[in-house]
Image (cartoon, one colour):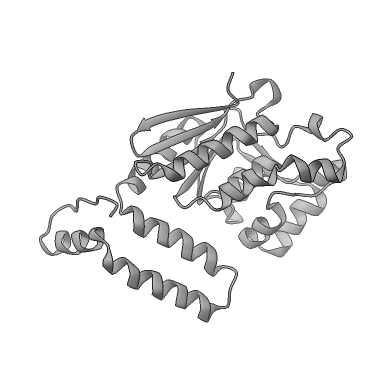
Length: 256
C-alpha cells in the first residue's frame, strides 16, 4: 500500500494524501521519499497549478515515526538524507494548501507550516513535541513557527511541547481559516480551484518574492518585488488580463 496516495480532482490540482493509518500517518523514510517524488513531479508538470497536502479525516500527520529514531546516531541521520524531502517541499514553486484535520504534530506541524495556506478543521491540533523525547524540531519548526506566530508563542510551543487547537492557531495567525471537519477538503479544493484559474507565472512570482522577502531588509525585499513586477509585463497573461479588464470580459489565462 502506498504511503502517499495521489488524487487528481481536476487537471490543475493534485492532492497528495499521507496514508499510514496504522501509524496515525507518522512519516517514515518511505513516506518522505514518496512525498518528495510527488512534489518533484508536480513541480515539473505544467498542468498542475496547485498542490493540496492532506492526511486522514481524523489525523493529518502525527509526527515522525519514532521507531526509526531508536538507536539512531547523528551520522545515520545525516546519511538518511531525510532533509532532502524538506528541501524539495521548501523550494516548490507553486501554491501549496494544507488541509488539516486532527493532529498535525512534530513533522506534521512542520509540513503544514511549509504550505502557503492552511485550512484547518475544528478538530485540528498543532504542536512541536520533540522536546518530550529529548529532541527539537528539525524540519523547519523552530524557524517557520517563530516567523509565523512570533517569538513568545513559538517558544511556548517548542520549549514546553504545548499543543494548540484550531481556534487558538487561528488567533495566533498560524492557519488561514477554520471550518467544520466535514468541510476541510471541500474548502481546500474550492480555494485551489480559484487559485488554479489565476495566472500561474504571477502566482509563482508572488510566492517567491513573499518568501524571499521575509528574510532580507525591507529595501532589498522591495527591490525583489519591483523586479518581479516588471518581469510580469513580458507575460502573455498580463496582456490578456489588462485587455479583458478594459473589454469588460473574463480573462483566459494560459500560464504564459
